[in-house]
Image 1 (cartoon, rainbow, N blue to C red):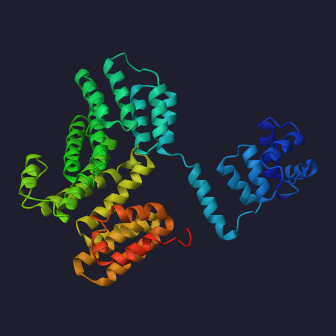
Image 2: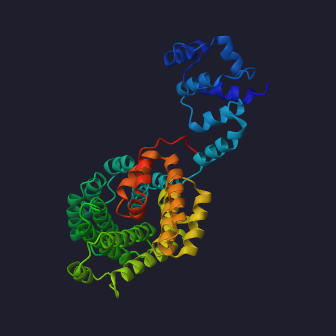
Length: 423
């Protein structure tokens, strides 16, 4: 009876879920699928390890017994319901989903000791990971850790920020900053970082429609993030946000330059913002990307990722790698992009390869490099057609400007394609 352990597991799960008899269990299965074919004797044989359920029956059982994806995955492997060539991938996915993440650790720490410091770290991590619903729930249900009015104001401002009401959030954060006691240094740093993030998110909404205002908001974000780092220079969350901000400032200036929006008036405006203006706009853009590379290097070399969430850490690696393309450092760009593409294949890693080949074309004007860019765009499309098609449109005057100028017909054909398969 090679399935005896799996059978015992299913039997225990059935009883845990309150199905004391197989008859009650079958009734619940039939409620999920009235056409399912199983009897008490068949369930008994499964639970004793003599028989194995079909994939369909196992799917229904998993729903009724509230099995986790990991539990269901292991049963599929035990019952040999997974093709042998997919077994390695399934086992890897199960292992990956069982990993303890940095957010898991922060949640555990917060649940053990609910204080302001652990609360703030968890909020930052969840926000960076894009878990908006969890952030809102935590902000609304967490206990008050202090009677100081600043704490109340800051929490109200965070709720507004997570909800996307950035103007109100900025006002509320500034009010909290005004009332913050001088000895609340970390609180001040958190508030300034939050203000910077609000300006940053506002800026992203105006990238194409109003690039100069976008640039202005990005500089405001940068200034507030710098003030936060002056108070708390080791905050890895803020360091990461600061690197992203510098990247987007450089990117927006590059967009303004490429689309002939740069003039003497805007040059004077840039100088007034005190962001390190050099000989010319190209030098400034290059310097900003260089700074971004240095800061991202700090982020990704932080011991054991610090407490940065996995998604944010991965993005830091991506943009550290791609920044070498932006400064046309061919050797490092090739090295880093090939490394991340070999370790983590997805639509974005291939989209970065598109940018790499465009950079190569800009340096050498070899048409075969544009062919390579198109090839990688097609591969990227296979991973996520909706995102990539949207990127082809939104990056028309940015990263894909040269492709749209020289390979317009091919891009239009790509937009009409339906991917053959997923990798």
